[in-house]
Length: 330
Image (cartoon, rainbow, N blue to C red; front, side):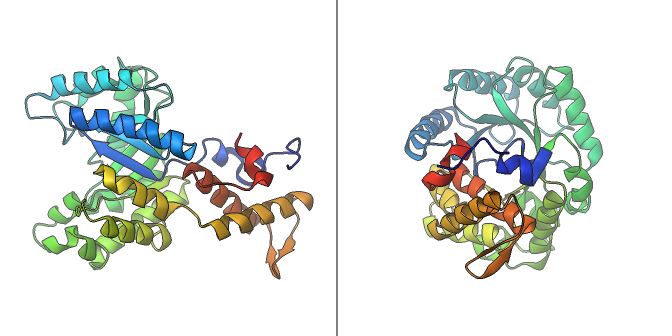
């Protein structure tokens, strides 16, 4: 076992950027009471199985709430969050800042839900002004410590992605595929909302890449959009692998329980990658973070950061870690 009395790799390599660790790779959305209850149970079961909470559960008060029944839906979601186990990772999506129910959502869910939420998701954010308005409402109801995650769903929002990502309260940015396509008034075909189209249409791919770049420029987590072919496990596995390996996303939405495992698997490092990362980090520590050679390749602080974050991702996705580095995650 490594001597852990030395400085922690996270502190050495990431400094203040590494204080919160990585978010779970999957963010599972549901807004129906029965499905929320089942998802809470599934979260507990998978935490026991993996030894870590491998997905966030976001209770949906936007698309999940019936028109005219927004207040009752928010109250129901609040009670379900209160019923969750202390180890649960639960969050909530409220209405957009320009919706009539937004202020009431925040008053109920943030004002009466202190300590329940991991974050609040703000949909249909267009500009930094929308973020500031959300912060004002959340803070006014005692949520000054709550991170915000935001959903960008238009070309204007994508244009402002770098400014939005720079806001200190924004933790993660998600891409809203279906609203993005429909916001173009038919100029993007409907096929672009499907599995093949969303990875081939130039405007959609440009938006995904711009969002990911904005997030990485400011140390935030880019979260990939939904796959509507929810019953096709191979489709979600394919999409998650492309999002993780090609587009730079570190997180992805699930809209059906069968999508959670393929997403977690796709975003997890391989056993070989984990083994190499552990060896490189231990060699770096032994060299007091000076450059080292590993398998005839040179490594220094730049690659050390990469391999440390790979180990963090392995831990967040419940992958087994070598005994030599497990102590860093105790």
